[in-house]
Length: 423
Ligand SMILES: [Zn+2]
Image (cartoon, rainbow, N blue to C red; front, side):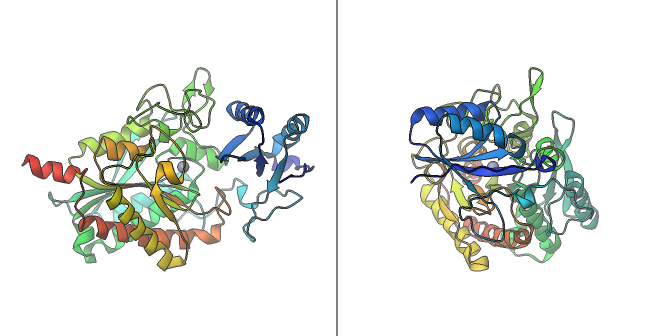
């Protein structure tokens, strides 16, 4: 298919907005040129298939990138990201409406909008104050820029409990993941005393913002920032937190993992070099709770993915994880009609090493380890505010399904089993 070269201008005031381009690459040299641009930060490659690359181009760079493409005969389409219609091809690009960086004036979390870090942290404190016998907020780490990484634990303190880990905003720009984690935390906190054994026999650990520096940066400066704010030399290049975990760290292919600090998927200098990954590792390994479920929320592919990410080989619990993932997907579908695909990460997403679910499954031996890609394939990282609440509701249904499924399923790769065997 031959694409048209399209000419347009972006107003100076919208310079921080992004456009999404789809490039059909017929030649390898064109592909590698795009990857060089990506590694230099001129564009962001957000998706890659055999014949097609999807790019984010910052408004201020549109003219420059357009010129480079024209010189090299690289054809592309500008894909709209307007929430009012499904992504048809448009011939004129408009600024992405929800890409504006904007701080809501409200101070209370209500799942009708996206909120900055202090509002999320105030919400956690409010739950602790309202439900002091079950809710505890603690600081589990400090970021490179000195921010707290805060965790909310909800528990009846029964020593026999197993653990559920639920986190969001590992990648800064995936704001909907924080909405979903706070929504689930709110539901569990409010209903805990009246809930069935499937819920009260668990210690619930919520980290709504794994990456507070990056998250803050997306609210103030660069909406499309993904990594943390780690320094490399004199520059803040950031590390991709979901490539910094210690299981199969740094091994294998280079498309979605890199040793180059400027790359979108920079893995860091060594495994657990970052405060965010270290904080998660320490809680999971040393809290004394045998974790049975690990859910990390991302956006935007609408998928429920499980280990492995570093190989296409099935993990020992493949069948259990597929069944559990399918139970989640079914619950989501019954809530909203949305269809999430299910499968092992390598098969349904792409190759990646040093991810949190490979580590939680491979090292921490948490059998029900899932990376959930939330909405939306349509709006990508810039989800329409009107979809926040329904996305939270469908996700809560998914959590209920996996909690019940995990309790009735014997797993092979299981810290709970290992603990019982040692007794
Ligand atoms: Zn992500």
